[in-house]
Image 1 (cartoon, rainbow, N blue to C red):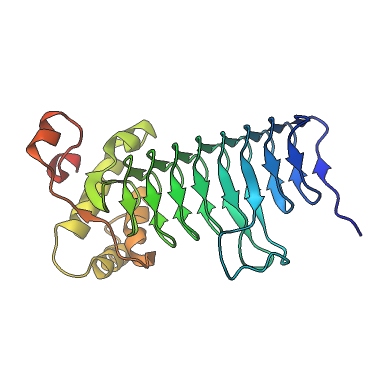
Image 2: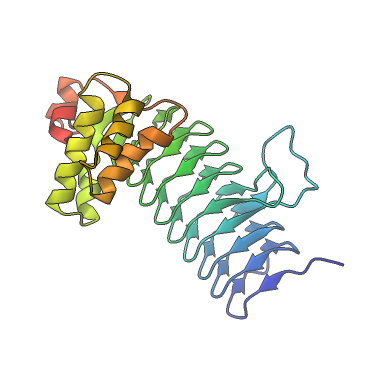
Amino acid sequence: MCERTLVAMTTTIHSTAIVEPGAVLGEGCTINAYAVIKRGTVLGAGVVVHPFAVVGDDPQDLHFDPGIDTGVRIGDRTVIREHVTVHRSTLPNTFTEVGSRCLLMVGCHVGHDCCVADDVMIANAVLLGGHVRVGHHAFLGGGAVIHQYCLVGESAMIGGGARIALDVPAFTLVTERDGLIGLNVVGIRRRGFSHAVLRELKAAFRTIYHEPGSMRDRARDALESGRFQEPAARQFLASFVHGTRGFARPRRVSKSEVETKDVRPIEEGV
C-alpha cells in the first residue's frame, strides 16, 4: 500500500515546496517556497516552515539503515526558519523531537535523536549533535556547538559561539568552552519566578559549586535531605544526578568583561 500525505484542510503549501508521502501536517501549518518535508515527519498545528528548510531527512550516521521507520515530530506553533535542518532518528519507531512554541533560527541544525522541549529558542547557525537533550525555555546563542549526548537544562542560556561538550545544568549561564558564569538570573526573572524560588536556586548553586566533594553526590544528598522544596531548585540539582558527560565548571572572568558588563562573575550571578 502506498503511503499518503495527511494534510489538514487549513494548511498552506507553496507550489515549490516538497511534502513527501508519509508526512503528516497539522491544522494551520504554512510550508513556504522550496521547503522540504520528508516522510515520517509529523508537524503539529500552526507550524511554519520557511524557504529551504529540510525537516526529516536521513541522519548523518554512517551506520544508519535508511529503510527503517523513523521520523521527526515538531510541536504546535513552532517556527522553522530558512536553511534549518532537522534529521530523523536512528532507532526504529522513534522520533527526533522539537517541542511546541520553539523558534529555530536561520541555518541551525538539530541532529538525529535529539529531544528539544517546549519554548526553546535556537539562534542562527547553532549545531546540535545527535542525542542532545534541551530543556524547556532554554536559549542557545548564535553559532553555539553542542556535542552529542549533552544535556542542556531547563532555562539554561548558552552564549553565542560557545563550544559545549559537558552537561549544562538547569537555570545556568554557560559560554566559551563549557565555561559556567553563574545562574541565568535574567532568564529566571523573566519567567516570573518569585524571590523565594531564586533564593533557593542560589542556595542549591552554592551547595554544588562552593562545597567540596563529588557534585553528583552532593546533588543526590541535597535532593534526599528535603532541604530544597522549590521545583526549580530540585530541577537544578537533578541535572547533576542524571547527567552523564560531566558538568560545566566556573570559568575565570576577566576585569574587562566585568567593566563592560558583558558577563557577571559567579559571586554576582548567584
